[in-house]
Length: 119
Figure 1 (cartoon, rainbow, N blue to C red):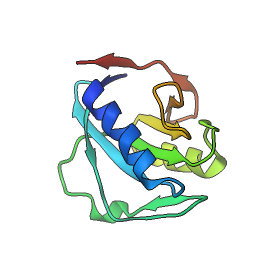
Figure 2: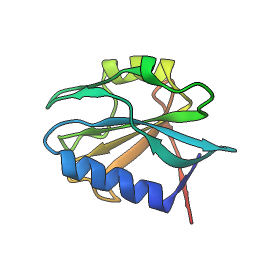
Figure 3: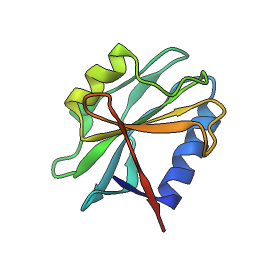
Figure 4: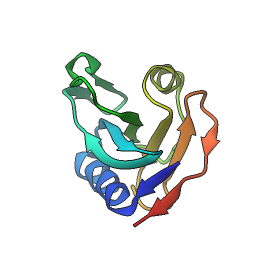
C-alpha cells in the first residue's frame, strides 16, 4: 500500500486532536494510493469508535479505514478485525502519542502490511 504524506500527517493530527477519544474515518484513493479521508458520522469514545457506513456516498473508492487507539497499543482488537473484514483492503491504527513511530497498517485479516509514504 502507498499513502500520501499529507494524508498521514492529517491522520496523526486528527488522532491527537481527538485524544483521549477514538476517532474513525475511511481512506479513499486510487491505484492503491490512499489520498484522502472520508469522514462519516461516527460514535467515538475512550474504548471504541463505530462508523455509520450507511451514510457512504455511492461511487466512493474506499481503500480502507483508519482509527486511533488512545493507548500505546497499535494492534487490532477482535472488534477491529471484524471492521477490517468488511471495509476495504488496508487499515491503519494510530496509537498514542500519535507520532510517525506509533502507527501500523494491516490487511483485512489483521496481518501487518508495509506502507510506502509518497509525496
